[in-house]
Image (cartoon, rainbow, N blue to C red):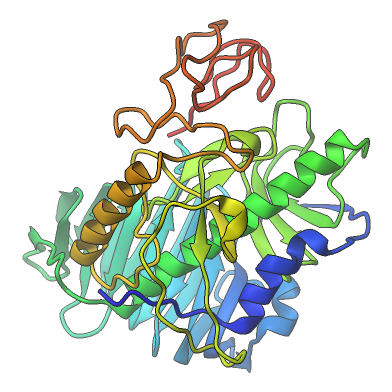
Length: 417
């Protein structure tokens, strides 16, 4: 494990300055089309045309579109909460950009699929070298098209078919795509640069959502009506309003020059980063990830392990985390095994520093991990408040989907899988 960060000066600058940007009132663009190209690092092309950061707002993969990378990586947004990350010297094709039946083909190289919100009764399938993989739940999935083609479930569940054979893959298993369709334990010690890159991208994606959700909540609280300042929403069916019910989807931010996921609740990446909608963001347990950039060149210096200190005194980016599955904070982990070790170390450091807290300093409820804060008194509809300064310190509503309020519709549940 290398305790270092690979962060470009442009990305860091955008994150730190975003809250200072005065953004104009934005309109709504209602659409159900997945396939937005959200981030490009290095050299990549779409249907033979070079793509870069300047045109990302209008760069989409349509049915039949071919995306290729050379020395570079690309992040593609599928349905809300689903991120497809493409490695170096790889090629993917969009087969069907449908909100309820998304189909992608991995033709060369390596791709990684992060599913943070699996929608039941929808279909998300990946074809590769004669095999077909159907995603069954939230998780992290790895597709290798070169050499011996394989599908690995780092976390989650998938159904894999090849010819007449079918198999179910659970966490920590992989299938070798051949007539035998052999399954085996996934090598969690195997270093994979795309795995490490995907973790860093997940961290940035969660941070962007956090910044935008806070801005949206603040804008509404200051009297804006009918929308969120500076954001063009890119949603599935329904509108996006601050009335306790959200139409979750992708949202373009002019300030970040990026698409971001604005969820209607709270969701977590398999890496442990958290995504919170505007009605929930005030209760998010957060950490400040230290960032050190040398000379704006994109090179970075080592970052020390987490130390107890006030959030406001740390230079970095604020990111929500999963209190039950803390990410590997401040660590470049290139394998699931090294990530797990770093995650455990981060959890110990957080406990030693007094536990997770919200941005406002309230203790964050964490379930059984013991990071501080009380457990909810009740999760039932209409339940009371939290005990001991819990995850949702609202005096009127329960913690995970309890009672009447503050952060959700009266009696509505807030906990999401």
